[in-house]
Image 1: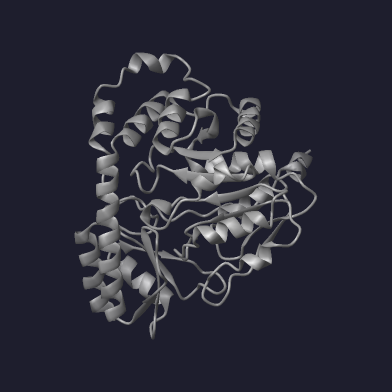
Image 2: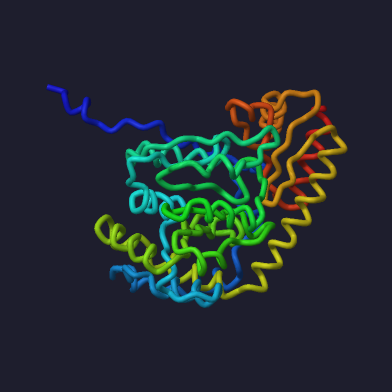
Length: 349
């Protein structure tokens, strides 16, 4: 009578950072501590709710055009979706259909294995070295595709453009996805390489550097053939992925480049200052090029620090996983929030 339960697809879900229901200092999900561009607020105030009764443009051409103009591409080179998670999931469905396994680092964004299981994609994880660096030579072997974040998460380590180029040169017959959720906080984007390599897809998001995690906007840039293939899958799955307000506010956020660069500069400055202060307290941090720090203490266990900070209503991220279970991922907040963090750590330590 209940045999349908045997047919349910079972996957181990991704576990996001805790979203507390009370007011705390929230440094556990890499959100931007500053509000979106004032132009976004103006767009909200002037938003015509009459348009909500109509379907949005399925091709999302307004946002694709603004992004294309900003980065120097054509709209046909741009795909947009409901956050970069949606974009990457669509890319998995579109490109990773080989009998050979796809490859990604063993310490990385944990959603990759979830998507692989969900879409029934074979995969292998490739071990990073003792310093958490990705070993490009280990990706030279036969595979069905490659994906990795740059900077990586949760380690915050950035690999230079020569690394990406070398990886592409050794993998010309599969799609290589570079997940650049944190690229605006340091390093050079691989976007320019998409003009040279027709198998490269670069994914970015509005959730981090553009302060719009709650709006859910992500995008991919690549060869027009790659983008067309993704749109074909999208239109067979859900034509109306982006709502009217997201399209409008996303456009306004991109147009305000001055505000965008100003907040990035402030976050990077706070990151470097916080890193120095943590080091003085006995922490060791990776060379972060993201909007967070990946830190371990010389004498105190990460889990203990995590729990003690939480008792003081300061949330950071702890991963109970092999090789990184003595590290904390600490989002860069405002100067005041980081002052509170350091004050709490002084008491704890």
